Amino acid sequence: MSLAPDVLHIELGERSYPIVIGGALLADAELVTRHVAARDVLVVTNSTVGPLYLEQFTASLPGKRVHAIALPDGEQHKSLEVLGRVFDALVGARLNRDGCVIALGGGVVGDVAGFAAACYQRGVDFVQVPTTLLAQVDSSVGGKTGVNHPGGKNLIGAFHQPRAVLADLETLRSLPPRELIKYGLIDDAGFLEWIERHVESLAALDTAALVHAVRRSCEIKARIVAADERELGQRALLNFGHTFGHAIETAAGYGEWLHGEAVAMGMLLAADMSRHLGWLADADVQRVHDLLRRAGLPTTAPAIGAARALELMGMDKKVLQGRIRLVLLRRPGEAVITGDYPADALQRTLQRHFEGGAA
Image (cartoon, one colour):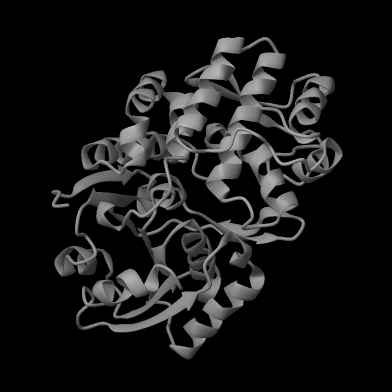
C-alpha cells in the first residue's frame, strides 16, 4: 500500500500535534525521526504486534538509544500491574525527562504507554503509532490514557496529549469496523450513510475505503477534542455506547468481549433507550442493528442482569451527583449527553437487553 501521507492537526495551542495517515510510515526513517526528537526512546508494544513490526520500526530510529518492552496482549492486561512493568522499563533504561515513550500497538498499548508517559518524572514526551483500525480512528487521538480497575473500566488515568500520531494503514489487521459507526451516528449523518454503503469494503480492508474512513473519523474527533480537550462538555459525546459497553466489559471479564464489540452493543442499547424516550423511530433502531450485524458485530447482550449493569454504570466517569448521564440520539447524526430521563426508561432498557438478551 503506497500512499502519500495525509496530515491532520489537533489544535490545542502549545499542545497541538499532527495526525499523519498513510502507507509504509513505519519504514520512513525521515518521517519517524521528524516526530521523535528525543535521543532516548522506550518503545512499548505487545506480544502480538512486536514480532510483526518492532524490528522494522526501530530501524527507523537511527542514532537513537532505543529500548523496548512487549506487554501481554489483551484488555485484561490493561492494569496497574502491567503499568508497573512499563515504569520498571523506563527506570531500567534510565530515561530522563527529555526521553520519549512510543506506543506501537492497539488501544491497550496506547492507553498504558500514554499513562506511563504522563506519570514518569511528571510527564515525558509520547508518540502514538496505532496499528489497529480502532486505535487509528479513536483511541490514539485525544490524549486519554489510563488503565482499568476490577471495579470499572478506565477508572485510573490522565489526559496526556501525544506529540504526534503516525497511522500506518499497512499495519491494519483488525476485525470489521467498530468506532467508525459511532462517528456517523453522533455527528455526521452523511458519513453514516457512506458507512452503510461501504461497510463490506471496510470489513475487507479496502484501501480507498480505509483512507476515507480513517481521515473522516479523525477529522470529527479532532474538531471535538480541539473544542473540549478535557471532556468538560461536548467531547463526552464521543462516549456514545461506552457507558453501557464498559458495564459489559467489566461484568463479562476484560478480554471476554473486545472493547469494540462491547461499545457496539452499547450503541444499540443507547439507540433502543432513545426509542423509549420517543426520539428515534423503530426503523432508526433497526438501522443501527442492521449496520452492526453487517459489520460482524454483536447485537445480543450478555445476560449479566439489569441490577449488575446498573451498578457498574454507576461507576462511569460521566456520573454527576449520583445521576448516570448517557449519550443518546435525538436522531441519526445528532447525539446529546443527558441525565434528564425517566428512571424507568433506563430500567426497561437494561431489563430488555441484560435479562436474557434481546436480538
